Image (cartoon, rainbow, N blue to C red; front, side, top):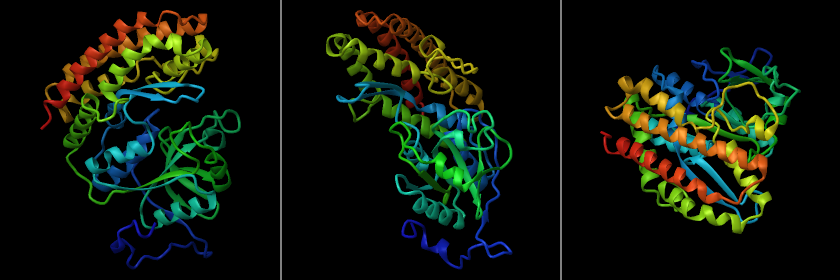
Length: 375
């Protein structure tokens, strides 16, 4: 860890201690609410701390629309379709680091005591730390879920610690929240669905932040458009979608109905625009939030329209229109998939091909509009 940090920042450092001689550290950072955007809320807090400017979370988070097809021959879900590019976690923070101007100091999979030592050391050097993949069951301030329901994958920003507690920013709360260290160890003890291992953290060392927010978001959105249109990997972006369209009708002969039910259910779950969620027709549960299954195209379209005049280019509104249409197509596909899962009927996969081809057309138009008007 010391090797990674700039040696100049280590000169003259002294650990802050309370009057009783116990170690402690608190950083005072700005904070804003950002419901359901926990993976990037802390990142935006750190950026504002260093620049005095706020990057809208929705432009950072929802801009990663796209396509991925993950094949796992021996997995319970042999084909996992994600209508985004990359995933949250390390990929998210690595994607933006050069564009925004920070370094990432990451770790995962180590024992809690080693991890706890590392994140405290980062705080001691004034580097806030994103704590990734927490279970809300162990977060006392999350009263709806605390010791009632396991909700994995939550993300908070660590801004302080003392001998007994961790102090964090949570995207759903206005004030600094407290997590007892013993509860943090439990909340952090599990891997998160292949995205991160246990005890995953990301120190955000905002050393040389870029200050032109319009340039930052345009460059990030343009980079994502380029990745979609010209991916070097055959399972990502337009190449991945083309491969999927060619393969999909053959899956009826490749997989059992049970396997296809899992493939369909995974697709449905990860098209939730607000968060991954199976609808009532499949899960039998009501979670009480409005979560259309448009794979965040509706959210990204709204963000493009909202910020077109302040941070965008002249084509953002046109691109937003195409993403709105592709989101509607995704919702139509999901409605069909839900019906197939409920009826356990997977014999007519080819009926979805025209819809996926229409989706491909709208997305290509949107991404080309974005890419070829970048400064």
